[in-house]
Length: 86
Image 1 (cartoon, rainbow, N blue to C red):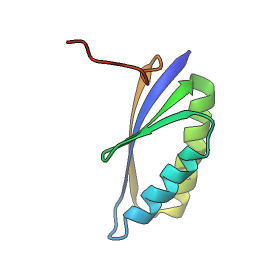
Image 2 (cartoon, helix red, strand yellow):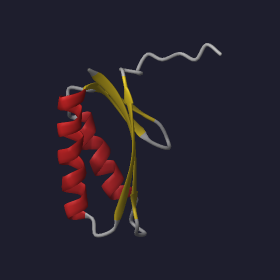
Image 3 (cartoon, one colour):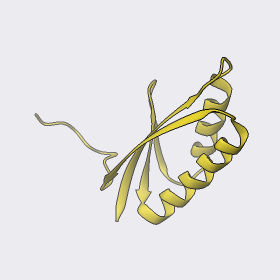
Image 4 (tube, rainbow, N blue to C red):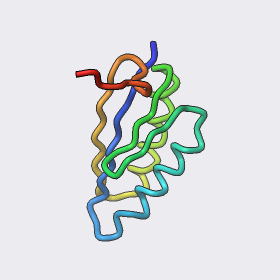
């Protein structure tokens, strides 16, 4: 089963940009399809593989950042080619 995950990261300190950039760069190094915008990053692929990859990267970020919030929205199916038709 393929999934789509929308990820937002909020480090709770003044120098918030650096950890976000590091997290996004780690996602870019994957073999998964990634989309970025000014509010969040989306990653698409097989459930087990994407979840393991995202889990390890979130875990690393949480160990490095004292106060950090992650918001995840997980959708079944690969929505990378979704075009609204409404």
